[in-house]
Image (cartoon, rainbow, N blue to C red; front, side):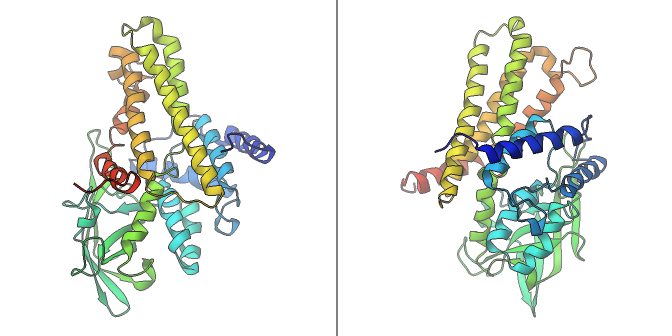
Length: 387
């Protein structure tokens, strides 16, 4: 495992840092879970695309820079260091795109990837259903062949970005007589197709980061099937691997947060009354560093021809639970100020930590609940028998 970056990566870092310094918005954008914020984040993604920074590791023909995975890690480090906006296009560029590169036809790549990179088309995820959340193989939404098309019927819920997205990728059952993990097909679905109804799900703060999506005989051509018909489970697991592995959550997200936590302790540590806080701050920093080193190990493996397999579940459990612990420590440092609104005089930027904490609580649930991931680890990594 090589833990150093070479001259090429450092030159790439300097270029990325200069561009981000000149272009990152000086004021935070509105929440991407609002219509206004969604479009503001889309505009930011388009600005990145114009100078080929939105998908640096993609081939140039699709809007990228043909950069390697090391350069991508460097860019992520600089992106989080600069405090750049969250990626409203993440479902597409971090989850669907790797699956398209692996399973998509040349026509599908040419059709979807450039529009994804430019944020012209934002994607939502249509996997969970009311009775099939963690148990993805239990989905009931169906697709029935009709000539060269398919008619899709069913309901998806907790569709991230579903309230505003233009497209959805999702699993549907094409062979109801097949075993649970078989007879599933992976579809690409326009959200404005006749028969699609979107109902935003309001969160406690009133924002709509998710949506329910109802489909009633939605006609989708066979050209919008990703992978083989009835082989969608394997395609979906490739997407899940990207979601649980390093694509969705680069280590820079957590090393930057850990650095801010150390700074916060430097400011407030003397006022804290919890004697365990210094050790917990140090542990949070070490946990983030462990994740960074593990990612470097994974990258070294990939660069020598290896693949990320079921150990992605270990990765997901680690970063999701680390994120909760890190933010819990920050809130303990802030004490009563942690729960103040952003405009309160004594907030001390506590609102950003509170918002991060509330979001972190979803981490052990999305991308496959950690209970399910521990089953995967037990069976497919450790080789333990099913109970």
